[in-house]
Image 1 (spheres, rainbow, N blue to C red):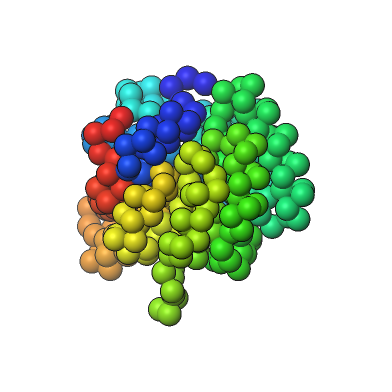
Image 2 (image 1 turned 60 degrees about the vertical axis):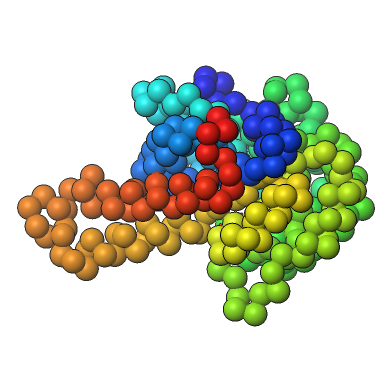
Length: 289
Ligand code: 13P
């Protein structure tokens, strides 16, 4: 590990300070650079989320680690940055541990609880020895991500308590949140469930997945109730898409050297930076590095 850090300290500080740290998922070099530079400019800690699919797209976990480490050095990024596997299966968790990730999410929520418990136990021990942070999940979070489709159920507080007691760094528990766009008739976050989970899990920082499209006031309320990490992915993809579409629809790619990918991808890059700043403002993480 070069400049990368575990997510443990930043999340414990966030829990104590009543703010949230963003996990922003990355897809390529432009995404990574946009998130890292914004975090440095705003002095905010950040967790870079990498799904199994995104890692495959970027040619593998080792490539991702090498890119992030080198970029942090060449851009002199000094704020706390964790490189985190997002929704990994057991094999992916092991691969990331071997590839220099500083944080792992093992998503055993689709497994029978006993198997989730056993595999999380093994990974808690491995991550402890190596100084990595570990996120576990109880109660499948809805929507679709990399082919894993959850039903959006709420987690069972007793199961949360058992997994939290293993010593995981952070716990993702479904409270009615889903990945991607929320349906119009979405009932909102289930704060009564969050309250029960908080009471059952002691001082483990809780993770809110599906940060895209949750009204700011609900996110802030969840942070006040013990959510310390909020994951955002789709919203950055949407603003990147919109900015790129506008550039092309305005014909800018056909003017001069507007076809140069460094020009063509620039509006999307700036749009990600603006979105990340907006999220940090809501989560309260600016100046918390
Ligand atoms: P969204 O794509 O809904 O923002 O969710 C991101 C996420 O939870 C990644 O694990």
